[in-house]
Amino acid sequence: MSEPVVIRPVEPADLTAWRPLWDGYNAFYGRAGATALPEQNTAATWSRFFDPAEPVHGLVADSERGLLGLAHYLFHRNTIQLAPTCYLQDLFTTEDARGRGVGRALIYAVRERAAEAGAEGLYWHTHETNRAARLLYDKVAVDTGFVVYRMST
Image 1: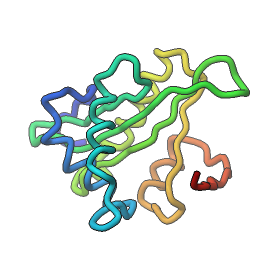
Image 2: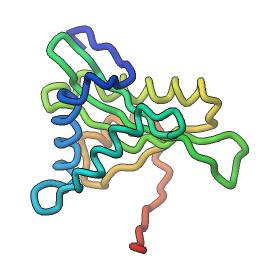
Image 3: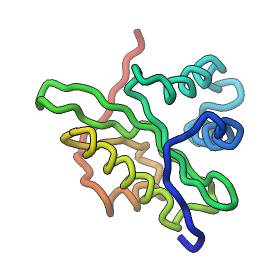
Image 4: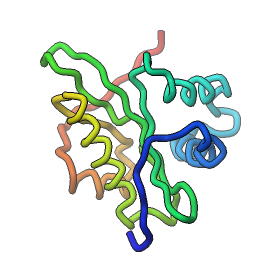
């Protein structure tokens, strides 16, 4: 990173700067236009970051030019370990921040918070075609080979 970037928790005053990142993330995964997330989902996501009863957290990469990226993560229990685990659900940077260490810094900041919370691990998934992200992920983590299936209820 050539300019100083600070990774910090999202703050209520960040909404206006966070929203284009959130919209860009969703557009990347095809959730835009007619397939956009309902506004109530965005509002609920935003409010969860500031509700101490929620396990959902948000970080941003902040620079003198504004917010360059976001990371949303949550803690949950599982059946194979006693400690919670951490799921990095959303990771996104502005196009001009890619390849400059911002995504890596966000991942490591989530890992640090997971360790502080006593989580035994951190995991995430991405689409197989997300080659740019996978170049980074292959450097910082292990590809477990698991395939994700979904079913509507």
